[in-house]
Structure formats: C-alpha cells, structure tokens
Image (tube, rainbow, N blue to C red; front, top):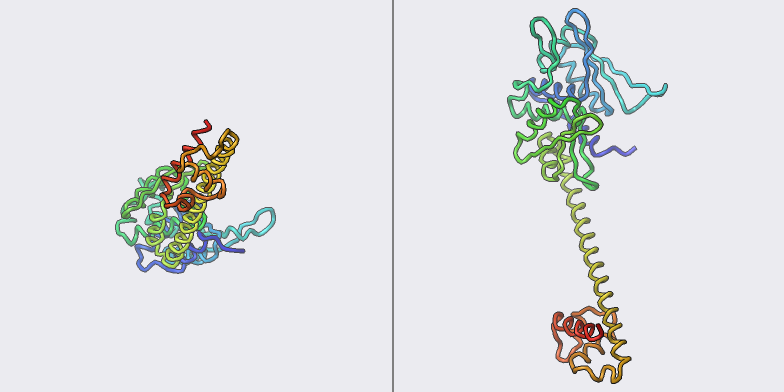
Length: 314
C-alpha cells in the first residue's frame, strides 16, 4: 500500500533521535499530549498508553519513553471486530512511580497538596529553548499531525482535543519567524493549521524533515507550473470562444448587408475591404485580419472596422 506524504514525513522525523535530554522530554511531552492517555493507579502511581499507526514511530516512541522513565513499555496491536488492525499500535507503560514522575517533568500533571492534577497548557520550562520548542512540535506532529501532498493541496494540521492547549500550541508555532497558524473546530476537536505553502515548507524545516522539505519544494513547483499551464490554457480557450463569437456576429452582419440593394459595393472602401477579409476568413483573429489589408493595419484598427460593420445592421 502506498504511504501517504504525512506518513513519510513522520518516518523521517522518527529516524532522528533527540540529541539532548531536554529535547527528549519535550518531544515525549508533545507526543503524549496528542496521542497518549493516563492510567492512574493507587499510591501515586501512573501508567501511560500511547498509540500510533506507524511502526517506525512506535519504535521511536518506545525508545523515547523507556529512556526517560527507566521502565519497559509493552507493545500491542489494536483489535477491531476480532481482526488485527495494522493502523493502530499501542504502547503501554504499566502504572509506576516512575510514570508519575515522568508526567510531572513533562508538564502533563502537577502535584499540589499531595494531589495530582492534569495540566491543560504547555509548561513554560518545557519549551524554554529553541531546540526544545522544535522537539515539542515534532512530538505533536508524530502524535496527531498531518501534511497534505503538495501536488494536491497545501495544508498542515495538528489535531488537539483541548482548546486551552490548542491556543498554547498556536502561540508556540507562531513564535517562529513568518509562521501564522490558525485554529478551527472539526468534529468537536481543535485543529491548529497552516494553509500557506511557504509556511508549511518552513514548518518542515523546523521539524528537521529536510528530505521531505526538498521533495515538497519540487512537488510544489510542479503543482504551480501545472496550475499556471491550466490557467494559460483556459485563457486561450476563452479568447478563442470570444473570437469565434465575434466572427459569427460579423459574418451575420455581412450577410445582412449583402442582401440589401447594392450589397457590399455601397460600403466605404475600408469597410468593404474588412468585410471581404472577414468573409474569406471567418475564424481569423483581428490581428490576422489587419495583416490582410493593403497596407496592413493594427489589430485595434481591424477590430474597429469590423465593429462598424456590425453597427450598420443594428
């Protein structure tokens, strides 16, 4: 089965492991906030469930969370109607104190007066540095992001359940030069999105998806070239349609004049020359008709003479 452009971008991102511990944590936090859920247990222990449909991302996330928690994640494949679904892989971190500590460090939960509370926004210290902001965005995209094939349309989005968190993500993206993300609602969820081709290209660069940035640029160039060719073709077709309609009206006018007493012989020399040229060349353009005169005249002059013919029979 052919992989989507989004899947290929995610596989490229997942191929590169974060270089710093702070970036590890930021990327893990971003992924959990879009593709994870908590499994609270007694005694302050917390487990995590993470899901993805891409094996390369599953391997990357497993390494990431095992490195941060020091615990082993267990992999399972989701079942649908008794059948194994290749589109959903679950990674489970059993409830533990280490899981709770990781969630606190990642700004997923906070401990206040001995109680654990789920946080909605982005913890400021998590994205204090540019490298961490980029890693956080990578995690978000790996969890619930998509980017359309540029040969079809220009669209980048991250699906987020909580509107408060969506607002924080939008501000995070807009903190990068020339990025202007928007938010819309779809099926009860918030969509943080980009529509401008140049901004999507920049976002691929921010996520270090450099191979797909180049392929995006190539595809975008082909798409715009094809669109330009279509516009030129449509313009040419419209001009031909107008030319044909004008020629038909002038042929009708010439027929009416010829039916009158004296016919074309009663016309002034310049109009008679225009009428004869049109009669002999019904599909010619104004420029082509003008070139037939002796001496030749401009396109505008030829058009003016033929229009005068039409007005004679109104």
